[in-house]
Image 1 (cartoon, one colour):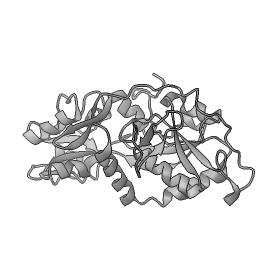
Image 2 (cartoon, helix red, strand yellow):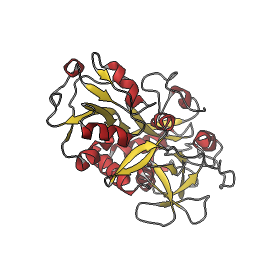
Image 3 (cartoon, rainbow, N blue to C red):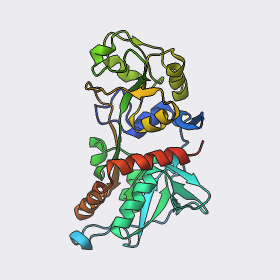
Image 4 (spheres, helix red, strand yellow):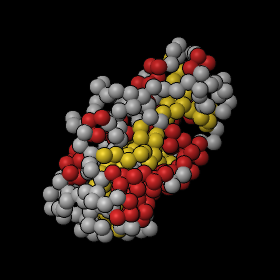
Length: 311
């Protein structure tokens, strides 16, 4: 495995992709709602036939700095990792063309952010479809100009690329029913005696160990199975993706998120863009662009991608 494992990762260093790929999560539909569940994306071609180039160093500061050829922004991603990025066969207002796959387009949360960054830089975005493990090398050999691919900054990755501020941050929260005895709980101590379920072989199950004096249930194999355990009353509480809560509660209006003052350790999963080192002025511009995307807009884009993602 080329990515960090949870056994070796330090708190805050494990990427969302590490988490989801180790869990084997992807889309699954239950009652009209898109869930993340157990079938991970296949590795893609390394993209050797994509147009090669060289990343532009900052020879001038401020407005004169640019990426790539100053016209096109080549965005590296798998295009196989919904809801962050995926491939479609028809263009829409949400897509960008995939430069190295004829007649294909990319959609997803990473794509929407890449479009915003490209617009802010005055560039036209195109996706370059690559294996996730090849993205940093492709950035440094000039095959792509930026990575927007569900990638989190880690100390190891910072040795090879420069990373932007995060453009989305997911976390693990807990869900119960509105009429549950635990609905008003705000601390771990108030959850004593509760039966709590997460998804097998994921952080959603692992973090339950941080809560004392609860019944840590045998985990569900899929997210829909975990959700069903709460709906049926088999569990009192489930762990869940913070970003996906609005869609969950839309489907299950009798569910409620626990407003906890106690937080799980090491559960935050940011997404950061990456560019080749030595482009400080561009990195500053990218961070300024990302800062204009409000929390409300981030959540709206996420919800829309959850709705559009392939089943």
